[in-house]
Length: 97
Image (cartoon, rainbow, N blue to C red):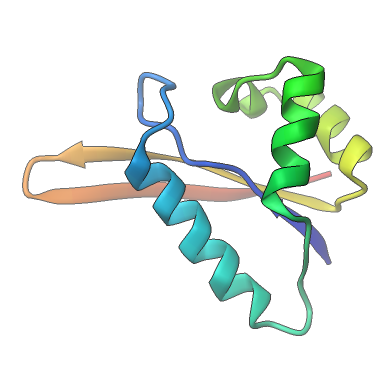
């Protein structure tokens, strides 16, 4: 399966360092599985800029599909990150394109 992993914005839709870190770690973990083929994050960022999409807009299935088709991916990993006091909550899911 060919997938792309987006940055994980906070609940207000803003990108943060921790969200980028989570996305990078998830990309590294997925790259270790022979069943996954990953699209480079730089390519993802370029297509997002071209489409003028923000990360928070990718919860819209139509926009996610359009991005996926432009990247040639079958799945798009999206999610959010939130600071809930002494812990960090990560919500992740794969959108089937």
